[in-house]
Image (cartoon, rainbow, N blue to C red; front, side, top):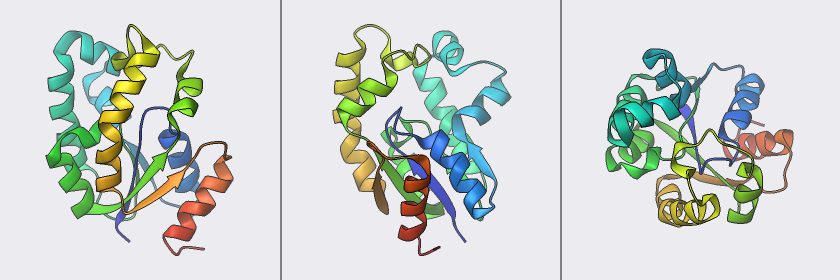
Length: 167
């Protein structure tokens, strides 16, 4: 089976759902951000501060190309769809599930989160801007869209399994 890529805005549930989906499908789970942090021995925030977003995005593309293209669940960073090259890789290499959450839900989930380098400053305004810029890219790249707003982990995993005809 082709790898399953989970995309979506920060706070949509990619990491949490990815772990649960990996357990359900008995597949290894890879997180692009965690892979980058392991190699760099720095947090995403530190990478952004020291080397900048352009460096991070290039690294993200490299990691995406190195991860398994079969029998894995891969959770991605929220901005991975910003590069056309990444969108093409996602579509070519696997099945893309866009985990959607409403903008209001994202604000609620990220209200206390200080780990997101792109949300420095006016968090609500930054979320609105990035959310509206990225939403069309998520939709364009996705094979399936699953709404996580107000849903539990098991419900979302079941919905993904149904989309993939794995139930």
